[in-house]
Image (tube, rainbow, N blue to C red; front, side, top):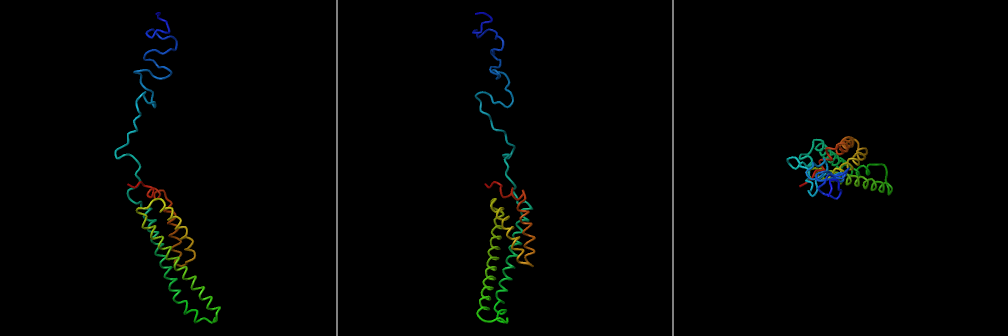
Length: 198
């Protein structure tokens, strides 16, 4: 074997051929430091070390103030809807007296009276159902998921519309419903409803 024999494993490498301890194919040889970002051969890559406490995002542990405010706005809308329902009930109770004292008489007057009573009764029941939905949403704020937040935004949008038709109490509903939609749309409220539950 000669010193320059390319088949000699103990000879000096010739122009560009790697030998023992030298990079082969662009990779570091045995004992050479590994380049950053590349795992060593045959060794699994360990996961990154997390800080104390797991290091994973756990979300807020206490309801943020803006979320508490949105919940209070729901309760205010519920109270306003109950008041509106009471106004409808009072109007319904006085409706017969108003129709008997009117100058209209006959079957047409009775038809209009029945129609008016039916509309007022429907609006009274609708206000009570709307109040019940708001109460359920407000009670779910502590334990509900993101669907509760989305439903609260939709509920607030309908409350804005209903507030326009139930003036003077509706003015309070209108203003509070706008605030509910804004506060329920905030990122702090979204984080509260998307927090992991154990």
